[in-house]
Image 1 (tube, rainbow, N blue to C red):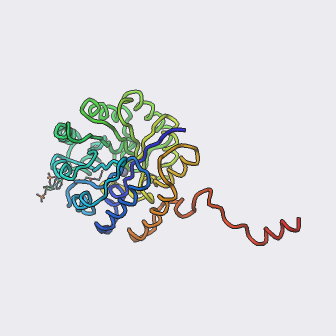
Image 2 (cartoon, rainbow, N blue to C red):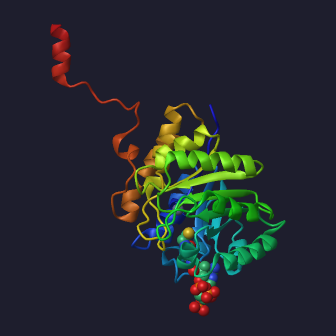
Image 3 (cartoon, protein in one colour):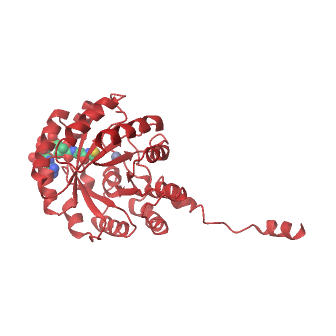
Amino acid sequence: MTRIHFNEVVTRDGFQNEPHFVATDDKVALIDALSLCGYAKIEVTSFTSAKAIPMLRDAEDVMGRIQRVPGVETTVLVPNLRGAERALESRPDEFNLVMSTSETHNLANLRMSREKSHAGLREVIAMARGRVPVNVSLSTCFGCPMEGEVAQDEVLRWAERFARLDVRGLTLCDTTGMAHPDQVARMARALRAHFGGLQLTLHFHNTRGMGLANVLASVQEGIDRFDGSLGGLGGCPFAPGATGNICSEDAVHMLAAMGHDTGIDLPRLLSVARSLPAIVGHEVPGQVAKAGLITDLHPVPAHVAELREKA
Ligand code: COA
Ligand code: ZN
């Protein structure tokens, strides 16, 4: 049995891609409910430009109002120094910096070259030193929707450049669900071989139905940290064709069925997941919230009971 750590990203990756603004009160209530479910970490919001991501323009408010639960870290996405200065005020437990390993996606998402992003993020890491731990999320590590294949060596080169700085963790993101399990297993082996001393997290999207297969391939290679999104919401607004993350409750359900310890209270998480469609105003992709747990049995139909009696 492996201890697997989950980082819930629904209010960041999930809500950034919703068509309608989710009220600040609803965001705060949802994060407070999720904080009681046993997550290792929650990515609460992002300190990006309100023009780029209008859905998360209430970052300060949300961070100021959520309950902090001991043992549950709060992380926030930070794209630049301006974002870091804003974020610091709201006392997160971690900064999650972001850049892309694909030049085209970095230009689309962050409006600058990868070199310029790296230089900016180095300044953020220097500013955060001694104040807040830093994780770096690298986007499009398993393929770019505009460039296609992103070579594993290219991903490792960017990971290495950050690993040399003062970071506690690296997250490799499959931004538009292009990864397949063999590719993930190779990447997981290389990651553990090169960066074994860091917190290593994988972030999958289920765009092509390979999300949970990729989680399984990662766990088999010793990865024990994942980002997941309640209900399977999510997607980068600047990545063509992006759809939802792996669904947290579906991933937790699968891993629990296999005997892994995720620390998550699954019935409680499912009851929170069932409140999500009303919050966002539409159905969500997650399956276990609809189907129930594999241990939730249905009543035996009357005619079966009769047949049994006759037999
Ligand atoms: N927080 C708030 N406002 C910010 C900001 C931040 N972190 N960074 C920049 N801004 C503001 C600037 O003040 C400026 O405002 P103005 O037009 O009123 O003067 C405007 O945004 C443009 O600033 P500039 O430095 O030219 O940034 P940009 O237009 O090149 O955008 C980013 C850079 C990174 C801030 C922007 O592209 C962004 O927030 N992207 C979102 C990325 C993201 O979260 N994607 C999804 C997750 S992977
Ligand atoms: Zn994502």
